[in-house]
Length: 401
Image (cartoon, rainbow, N blue to C red; front, top):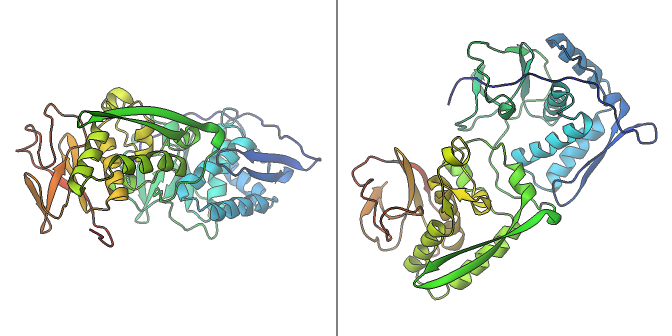
């Protein structure tokens, strides 16, 4: 991880509320299948001047603390609980509520203030800091996050939640100054783990055709995806391999892909079925490295890989892992080489060149196109003599093999 180095100039202008019966603003967020609505009292509207200081932020907090804000927080937390939203997906809802109250393009500082306030009142330890007119928004997180700035406060790691707005700024030579606004009961760490995918608006479902050839037969797929789900992960950071390998597919995507894969694999033994999944992941998608595709390293979850026009080795490793886990639930390890990542699977009987890890024998399954047409148990010639690191080991809780 790098030390703190992010951020952008804030734009601050007046925002007018849409008045409902003289009381305030009606907020509606259509991100998930069930619409989120809440009435925002007029008293919640606070002022932050265009040339703001830490005193203005503290005064904004004083104003909103005596406002009728609790219905917003209660509604958010009730929705979070009902729909079992993980923190990252809850934050996407918070972002959109803040956008309705104070549009980002009109008043960046005020928009960020509302996000910070709602996260704190939801129990998370979120903080603000200033570097001239750069408003830095960061949150307590104790996970391995690799590509966004962080810094330590009282031996606790805080990561920047608005990094994407400040990607070209370097605060190493312009260190931010924390804004001291204690918020009672705001102590929870924020997690990037996504273990349940909510239902998104079905009106934004799209279908993607893909195909590949196996044993001289062509297989066609029409996979359901959702554009809102893709947007929800636009600014998702580089999390650990374990975290992003295990991000689930949506119900729609799962239902359009997994049953068809199982149907196509009917009658195949375990080795052949894994080989089928390996070649599906290898050949049903176009390859491009992240620097050419995104201009930076970006790890795609299995659902994002299915939706993307291009993907690279770590994206395919995550998708292959998800498919093998879902269909066969076999032990697997992820092998990280200096410039490549691949997977290895433990079968009842190993195939090809053995990979020994913690006393178990695994067979390499290469899910990314290589110069050679690699079978299970074969390693690319360019990798054979290179060192690797096991960056994730999956062991099923129970094996029904």
